[in-house]
Image 1 (cartoon, rainbow, N blue to C red):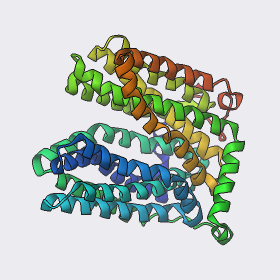
Image 2 (cartoon, rainbow, N blue to C red):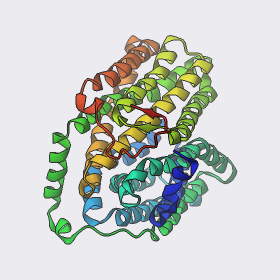
Image 3 (cartoon, helix red, strand yellow):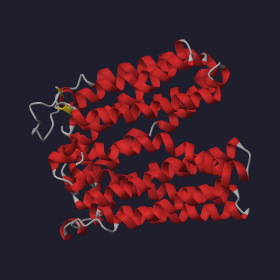
Image 4 (cartoon, rainbow, N blue to C red):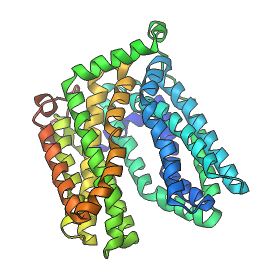
Length: 416
């Protein structure tokens, strides 16, 4: 793929404004986690309070994902994104005002986080499903990567910038910056013009829409097999890497600063891979995606066997590459093979299945680490992660799913 072809989607007016809107939105999102964490800790220096606020966001996000898919397919994806961005922006600005004024209480922040999580549940399927309406199908790969490169850069810069804002102007003002980005993103999205769903589609009931999406999901083997695998993989990663990893870091020479370096190395892997993928085309996107996911087991194996900072950073860098390869392969499979009129609903089933076991992993791995030892549990988690990724390829429909668009230059290297 030439450099000109790589940025070709930006010549599409609708995509260009969507790209700008999403970039602004992601800039705020990458800063939000740090800002919210320290905003809560400023109100109540309690891990329990922080956990309560974070759970208040994540629980409604999972519960309302299916409703979000229906809304996006029925009323138009850009409209839903605009509405949810406004709701998220106003909730963050309200939280910022409470923190800045010194009147915030934990229940205030939890209630506003719940509103934000509900808005995210409605907006995520719409955001995931809108891309095929913005660019021709043969430009979907380039469009995904044009989005991924700056977003991955923001994953590296966003938390650091947010940390500086928290120190310099306070967590309340950092939250206000995040709230403002939602509103600015909505403003950019008003320039996107795509057709609304047909009247016949809007007139059906929500239950009928959900049933139609579920029928497609369960009858499409590659789809439900991969989502079922990721239900387990995400539970393992959330428990093994995200929960036990920081604890192990504090108990070894890695330390808190070292853990930050490990997460940064993972983000750098995302960015480097997204740049490299511009010149590589996948004829079998899920085959290479699931093989790449094997790399995500490496950080847990390295930390479990010998927690050395440099080795863990290299493993995390490779894991970032693996996640980016799978992410591109999955988006191409969904965007090219799922009918456009139900894409957001199918994405909502994907997200629900993939996220639903995450709290189980978070709750289960702590007691397992206490009972059997953190390093031992991490080794088992890493082996299980690799095994599940490879077993998923036993499904022929996963292994052999082709690209729907095959117009590939004969000079372009490819994975087949």
